[in-house]
Figure 1 (cartoon, rainbow, N blue to C red):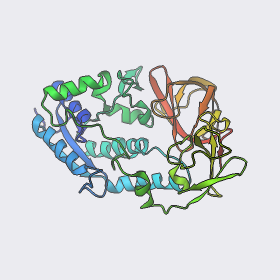
Figure 2: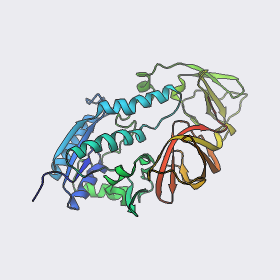
Figure 3: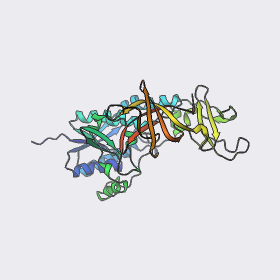
Length: 368
């Protein structure tokens, strides 16, 4: 007896990666549907966020592959569960990572739940990562293409979500993906990879953020309180930032560039110092909370592993030293630069991504 229900629903974004994801699953003999997620309010596009073109490209891929196509509006869920948190973090002077929250709250929650209501068994996306199973436990693993690996953005996935997800690109290199798209004559074969804020696109960040949070200019000071200049709003700056400060050539003629080394959030003061490796940017320890472990259980502490405190950072040896009321202390073997509250720390054991959390406090860094 045949059934028209799909086995897998592919999240088609209108990009090359999701296009090839659908192609590979079809070649495996899977019954698939494609689904385009509308997650932002304005679908007209403004030259910087071509969502309308993405929708047309996703439709084109579905027609090329002769698979059913769905388009769903998840904008209310995106606004309530991702974007408001994004704004709250910036209001608090922190630097959030919306891509991680998008995966947690939209792609692997709302989209997954919707796919299951349509009768599918799983969802698939064009993420560069892969999933395996050992002794009944699902493991989130790095992609073969380490330059494109996206396991960092997927650390919030739990066992149920991993069991219901597929990442067909996990064993491929990006050039191989583009070659497959070209041979299939997909309109997306040479399309530029998406960048910018998750589901919103490339924007002038300051202009975009100012639409939602009024900027509050304030003083730029050195750590000892010397007035250096004025910032345009403390939310616009992140630790270690060099560009856009507009204070070159000051402080007794030193030639080293200026960097953001801290924030006095309550006083609306941005702390700046000269030198890429200024001591106030250096630390070996941090506290993290809002923890997620792919296995569902925190490792036995103390626990040695590696971690990244930002995407594309090389793995850093560290030890999780304690867990007190859901906040862990992480100590690194080597000094780390510009670890930033609001960003994620993601843990690995070899090639397995075991989980992560949100950086809450960093020892020796001014962030109050």
